Image 1 (cartoon, protein in one colour):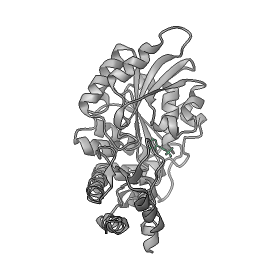
Image 2 (cartoon, helix red, strand yellow; image 1 turned 120 degrees about the vertical axis):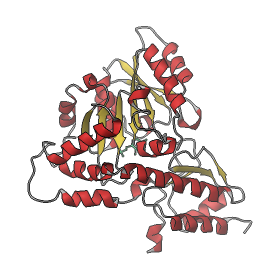
Image 3 (tube, protein in one colour; image 1 turned 180 degrees about the horizontal axis):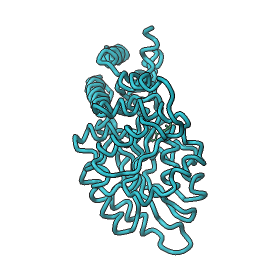
Image 4 (cartoon, helix red, strand yellow; image 1 turned 120 degrees about the horizontal axis):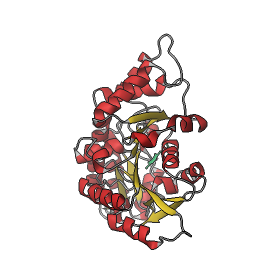
Length: 348
Ligand SMILES: *Cc1c(COP(=O)(O)O)cnc(C)c1O
């Protein structure tokens, strides 16, 4: 089935369920348990998250990242507020207006910045643009870690953003669909890039990191989490068999498989990027700091790869061909792609 092998650079959600998650899914599948999160697995997963972040946070589980982002932003904003995010943020480009829908009209204000990252100055500029009653009031900054362009906010970046947010009374939401890749890349403790950095709520992504499905919404400011359980239920995001989200997630958290998976995907991306940049005419577009490689390939090479059955996207962010690595990417996959790249090069 070599053709099938070639699919998976399109997205990290093309990969299956990692063994640790699978094992715990099976473990939870015995006998009976209470529904709607009133079970042992949900408690274990929540407690493990509190342990990982070294704080008493409020934890909720839902099905998708869009739901996690939309509900948490919806919980922080009134309809007359605004959310500041990067122009390539998933909440802006890939959630079908979910955040606006859940907030009943909160305006999303877009900030430019290289590598998919906002700067503290960019945020301050947007806040200063209008301060009158006729414009929506800035309330939340939403940042993606790691970003949609495969870069990572460093501790310094986060510190500066925290300062500007404190100064302007803004809450901070973190879209952590690829949080594992960011933590693995920075090699820091999870608390340093979240509540120490002023993050109020984190959407802790697990699907792309090896889960069948499921995301955690983690409120570091417990005050802000009030009645969030009702919001989840109303949004159709309260799983009646919650244990089948919680148990595989616990399987990934127990021995830090979530980080191991993130680290592996990041290393694969580095290796792939090195291979691509060896090929005549191919260049890497953004710094490879997580599990994405954005490459500018000459048109004939791109077409030849597609013809050979490789799948990757060329419509994300500012363009370029995006190759995503995952927990399941193998060195053989990278080698095969590299060989096909060389074969596609007019020089060969
Ligand atoms: C994948 C992803 C999400 C979540 O998307 P869903 O398809 O709704 O699960 C959120 N943010 C980013 C940056 C993503 O890449």
